[in-house]
Amino acid sequence: MRGRSYGDGGKLRHVVHAAVCSVVLVVAMALAPARAEMPAKPVKIVALGDSLTAGLGLPESEGFVPRLQAALAAKGIAVDVVNAGVSGDTSSDAMARLDWSVPDDTDAVILEVGANDMLRGIKPQFTRTALDTILQRLRERHIAVLLCGMRAAPNLGADYARSFESIYPELAAKYDVPLYPFFLDGVAADLGRLQRDGLHPNATGVDVVVACILPKVEQLVAQIRDRRSS
Image 1 (cartoon, rainbow, N blue to C red):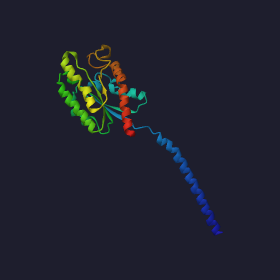
Image 2: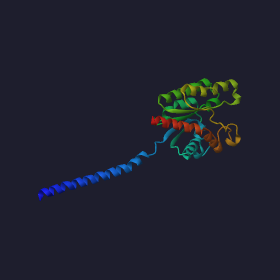
Image 3: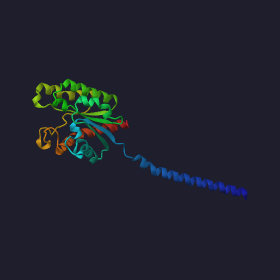
Image 4: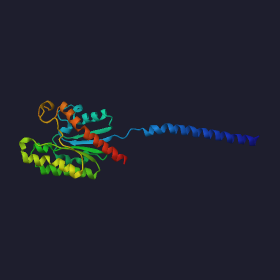
């Protein structure tokens, strides 16, 4: 009787063990799709710029960065856009604060500086040197860049305009980064899209800027996604 008893207990243990294994397998199979469908980590983009990036003269929700964030979200694109715009900054100012304005977990930078250099009549070679340094340092940190160009005011003359405006395409080619040729495309000189100062976009103007630059930003995000998957 004892032998049979021990034998029956052994069979029972085998049955219980098999049942437990089956439950574990079912649970694991149920959890696997959930893990596979976890959303991708948002791409972190730092918008490094001057008052055009900062949103000078506008409520916080109507500036370039929040409107760009909203436009990307509306397309289902998971991105965190950080506002690192400082009103009045020149390209040299942006270069000086680059390391603390662009933290180590940054995936990409939208670089928009140079307008204040132009408005102050700073020699284009100084602007070029500062932008060159910024791009070099971002390359060393393996951070992708979308470079935004600027145009010179007509009163500065043709020679200045040529020297200044050539900075952006030439540096974009040198560092093999995408170029958005003119940040204020569709807005500059349109008084209906500018604030009273005639320089900064109003809320309508910001939406135009965002709509125009959005395809380039989408390409930038796709570039980051491809890099992560490779």
